[in-house]
Length: 354
Image 1 (tube, rainbow, N blue to C red):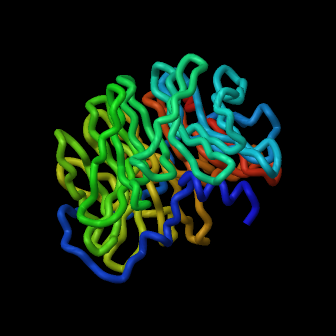
Image 2: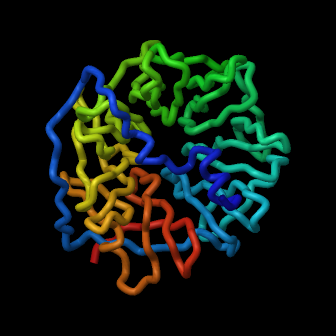
């Protein structure tokens, strides 16, 4: 495995769909009817596309965009380093104060505050908080490593940190204190997102070591269930409390879901077997990746009860192959990962009406 793929795996940037297929079943806490996604594209839905990698690196990944158009992620200038970046006004800038050869920015709030993960020479990694050119190491729960996944406008941060017995526990960092959110009786848990109301989503293992999507609100962790299978993970929550992620179906196929008003809706695929939702904005628009009929991953937008292959709404002959949409702002601007000229590159899609 080369460094680019190893680092992506270590930092938890790319989720393995196959890892969600587990043989045993558990009781459903909430469920909904599976939906067949529609691929009919509205005539006026078109996007311009920009390559965010103005540093011409070997590879780059966009993770999050805020409502001011600032994008964060990471890039590989060579085979031996990985660096966090912020992109704004057509320019990618390396975040230089992390003092780490391998690091990634994973989220940015509307105040321009950034969180992520930085690794050390001993391969341990720590969550960081970056503000006004200064970096704060968020530490652990007594273990070796931690990772920050999201930050809201209040500066509340979520992620996971290792305990003294080498278990990973979801945390909420608020007012200078890191709170252990616990599990569903298993060993590990991971927090992936937080909204402006302080609600947290992620996954937590039950007593059988099976990960289950959770909502943490008002000091309680609630199990969101699955789509008929066993495991699930919640990746994003908007300010209305709508949640998206990925969950197993009864036939062990991981599918993107939208959880709303106590029900989990299967968002379907683009003709293939698997899908995963990465983000939802405050308008209820969802982005992620889904297999097409050829089992090839494609970046998608789910809006108005339709799942749309984003490769079909960019200029023809652009040279891009969009594989995953990782975030969407309230203005409908989408960022993600694609292939351009044979390289993995970060992209940004900006909607326009023709």
